[in-house]
Picture 1 (cartoon, rainbow, N blue to C red):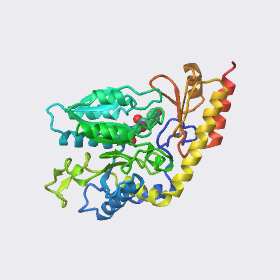
Picture 2 (tube, rainbow, N blue to C red):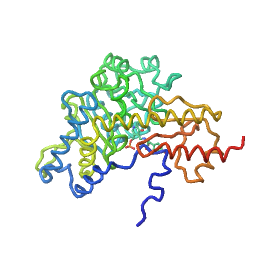
Picture 3 (cartoon, protein in one colour):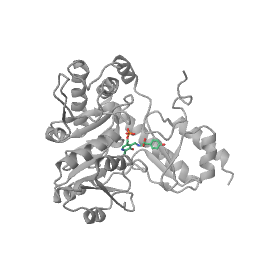
Picture 4 (tube, rainbow, N blue to C red):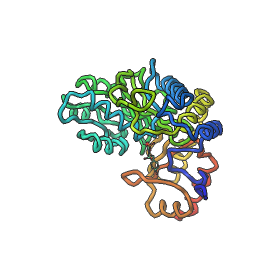
Length: 352
Ligand code: 0PR
């Protein structure tokens, strides 16, 4: 059996990364465990409590509650499900900016809620006026993105919280990607900055854990109870997760990575990633491309489709935004040498 041939050395599009060595080792040790069955696998179940405690610390949550999900998609779906269960509406709606991840479309589809998608402003952040105009008494949740998939932007979370409160909706923050870099910035994004009810924050992205390790955090364990179903033939009596059997490898690797890296390892990684993003943005600007200023380590630039295709043909794993810009995510495996080699290829292609 082959592994992915590029082994990360040309991967510039992914929001996943090489797991930290301690995370890889922990994942291997727990491969055959299932935290969905805590009566049978008590060790991994205790590790999950540790994972939630650490995620809570990272996200400014006093009494953390939640679980390790399959990824941001599951966490987002479950957050919408909590909101729907809480809401007193026959046809609840969810209000989100157009920059929100497509997993919310899956959530709306599965859960029978209406999705009200509002525009972003000139800084690619949720337009507050549009959010205000979109909410009503049937609004179950307002979604804010803290580190958007395409531009790495952070919505005005405290203001979104006020709007959510005004209609008794939950505020869900999608920090699936941003959650492990935002603690080292000045952004107001977490439970201590705003009335956040639920949050997606993924160890398997910037957290350097093995896939699959997503995080769902809730302000109050009562919110998790909205998800609970009875589990008659397990030792435990109820289950709040979407999936049944889950990966103990994800749980153990998340704990190992966070114990190793929180906070100083993540901080120095953030600084490296940010400097790389700034270096790349500068290099692209000098070559005449329109660059979306990187506020978190993610660079988007208006590179023509033909150039993009030629770079892909050279083996670079790059992706495009919905409006067709080149998009590069400065994950931990992305080094300055890789970026310099990428820009070198770009120079050789562009005879302009
Ligand atoms: N929330 C945000 C803000 C995300 O960026 C993503 C994933 C999710 C939730 C969903 O997380 P899971 O995939 O763990 O369920 N972001 C992109 C994705 O759909 C990242 C991406 C985009 C990767 C383009 C590669 C690529 O070419 O995977």
